View 1: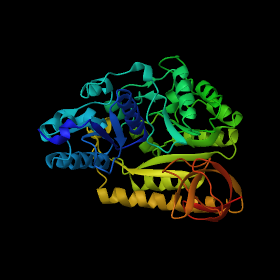
View 2 (view 1 turned 45 degrees about the vertical axis):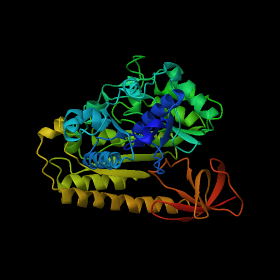
View 3 (view 1 turned 30 degrees about the vertical axis):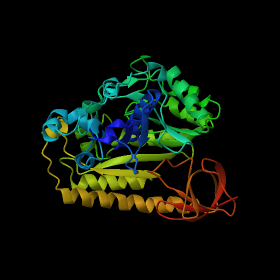
Length: 435
C-alpha cells in the first residue's frame, strides 16, 4: 500500500468554463469542508491526492480544454501523484457515455446536478442546511450569485439546455440569505448570473420577478454593487430599469447577449426578436437609465451567414456604440437545431469575420474611453501587480471588461473603493490617479 493513501484526503477542484461553473465548484468546496475534508481550488503545490475537474462543454475550444485537463490529471495519476480523478460539469453531463469508454482511468463521472452523488465518493453527506454556503475562490470582496439554473429558451445554436436542463429559479428569500452571508464574509460586489436573468421567477412565482429580487438584494446592508449578467432581449421586463435607476447600489451595467443584428440570422438563430425591436429596446434602456453601460456578445460564422449579414452587424455596432462587446466564432454543436444546417462558413472565414467585427468595436471602445479622461470614477481595487493597483469602475465586470491602472503613493487596501481621476485611456483599459 502506498504511504500516500494513509494520509488524510485533500481535494483539488479545477474549474473550467463560465462563472456558473465556478459557483458550482464553490458549493462543492463548502460541502466537502463541512464534512471535514480538506479542499483547495486550482492548487499548484501538488500536495493533494484527489482531483475534481469541473468541465465545460459549451463550444469546441472549451471541450478541447476540458479533455486536455482531464488527460493532464490522469497523467499525474499514472505517475503516482494522485490517487483519484473525478470529472463533473457540462462536458461530463453531455458526453459521459463516450468519455467513460475513452478514459476508463477516470474514477467516476458526474453530471451537472449530481452533487449529493459525488459527495458519496468521499463518504460525505450532502448537508441541506448549507444551502447557499460556499468557499469562495474569488477575492473576498466580490462573488457571483447564481439566481437560477438551466434555460427554457430554444436558441438554435445553444447546447446549454442539454447540459443544464430546464429553467429553475431559486426563491428570493434564499438568495437574500446567501447575499447576507456573502456580505458577512467581506463581499462588497455581487454579480447576478443565470443562463437568462430576465426569465427569473416565471416558474415559481408565475411572473417575471427579477425587479422584486433586485429590490430585496439592494436592501442588504453592506452590499455596495449589484451587477447584472446575461439578460435576454426578447420580452425584456422594463421594470428592471426602474429599479436600476432608483437603487444606488445596482450598477448601471447590463450584459445583454444579442448574438447578431441581421434579421436573417436572428430568425435562423431562433432569437425571437428582430433588429428593429432590439433597436427600440436599446433606445428605451438608455432613456430610462442615462449613462448605462451596455455589454453584448455576438456570434460570427453562423450557418448561412453572408458578407451582407456581417456588414449589417458592423453597421449595427456603429449605430448603437456598445460600451463592451465579446464575440464567439460559431461552433457546430450536436443535438442543437442548428446542427441540422450545413456549417458552410469555413473556419478561417469565421475568424476573419470575428476580427473584422472586433476592429469596429475596438475603435468605438477607444473613443468612449477617451471621453473619460479628466473625469473621476469610483473604483473597486481588485489587486496589486508590479507595484500598480488594478481596479474596476461601476461599468466594468471582472475579467471581461476594462481595468483601471491606478497610481498612488499611498497604500490602498485590496477590496476598497477609491476615487480615481482618469489621466490616460487606451482601447480597453484606463489609467488614473487616486485622489
